[in-house]
Image (cartoon, rainbow, N blue to C red; front, side):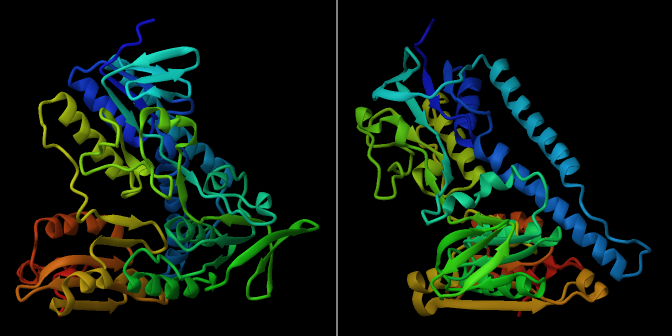
Length: 447
């Protein structure tokens, strides 16, 4: 067996696949190690199946809105098993597409765990593989609850193994995963309660979490804020939560832990290669994704920079361009990366939060906001308003942050992110003719 390559890639998720495929297209000889399904978290237990469930929830809400505006329809329940079949078929097509591309490029896939022997050598099974360049793209996994009775709960991976919709659900955690799962289940008919220590979406602009909380509560989701869960208890066929507020909450059919993710590094034997990690066990990298070991690189969730699939893909492609396409300066610019939370309704954000901008620019910050009822909601008599916000800096009011929540925010953010990335000013927005009637026009008519 030929075990010498130009590039060894550990992990067949978004980062590893992007880097391997781009390197293969540049003519590099690549070997990729993945003991599980190709596609990693995003394709199999993350973005793709999550978005499928979000679409199902959107369709459920659309049925109710259609009835409210006069359609002769009776909202029906989702056939969970049937929809999961459609979802998993879509996931399989994505995995198959990746496998085909790897095969077409002659990339060798080793379906085993790999660990370092030294900075240029990996061992998988009984075989050693060598290359001048090694990429670590092993991703992350759900953070364990670490509470008494935690084994009674499921995490986001477990959510995708559900065979039926649970009737009563508690979600522990108010980050993007928690609010996304809470919103999906609520829209599909579950009774949902969410428990947080620090409010919702604490890593986003503070107004977004506040606005989302109001909209979720209007939709019937109970939020127990600043309530530290101390344990999960089973009584007969139901689950209860013991909390620091000394109340027992429940009963529930399902408890979901969504308290973040941790990098997959334990099995890599990084010390053998001299690869350093920080206190969160994330691999330390510089702007060019170099680790502390020459010729070893880390991409995606495992390096703790920005845990988003498009970020992992972009960083992987630029690294391959740098190593194998004579572009020595190629690297990802991590500033102004747009991000969407697929809550109900979706949240969109690019650039600095108001707090971060004020910390950096002080009194030079000027903030503009607007809240309004979008036309579909008004027609259907649905309670709630959308929210949009511009964070500007300086006399020319350069836009350094753009944030919003409401229907369509996920789709409209991409174009506005281009403007923010290019350094648009508030005047540029005002000089752009609005498209009426839309929600997006509020960004270019904001006083």
